[in-house]
Image 1: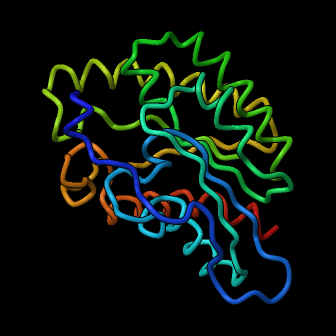
Image 2: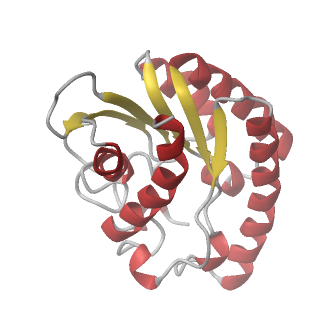
Length: 216
C-alpha cells in the first residue's frame, strides 16, 4: 500500500466525556494503530473511541470518559514501548486495536506473541477489563489485489490464534472480532480504513462483548 493514498488520522481532541456526569464515569482507553488514530474520519467522535464511548453510555446509562492513543503505522512493538506510557491509570476498560501493521510488515507470530503478551500485561495493570480486537479482514479490503488480500488474511489468522491464546491466560482479557463480511459502506474513501459507519458498527460489536462484563 502507498501510505500517501491512505486516509489521514482524525484531528481534534483525543479525550472527552459522553453523557451527563452523575457519579463516577466509566473510564475507557483505546490504544493502537491507524484505526485507533481514527484514519478514515475527521474527528475521534466519529472514530472507534468516540463510537465506543457513545455505545457504552447508551447501554449502561453511565457517563463515559474516553481517551485514545493511536499512531498511523504503529506495530505492536511501537505500541508497547511508545504508546502505552501515554495511557492513564485506573481504567475500567482498555481496548487494543493492533496487528494489521505487524502482518503487513511481515513480523512473525512469535514476535507478535512477545509484544502482545507485554501489552496485555500492561493494560491489565491499568484496567479492570482488557479487550484485544481481531485482525483486519484483509481478504475483503476493496483496495487490495485479491491475491495479496488472501495472503495477508492467512498470515492474520495465525496472529489471531496467538491473540486468543494470550487472552485465555488472563481472566481480565477478552479477544473479539468483527463477524461476517463487511459491507461496502464499512470502508472510507481510501477503501482501506473504516468509515464513520464502519467504526460505529465495529464499536457496536465490541460493546456487545464489554457491556456484560461492565454491568456485573
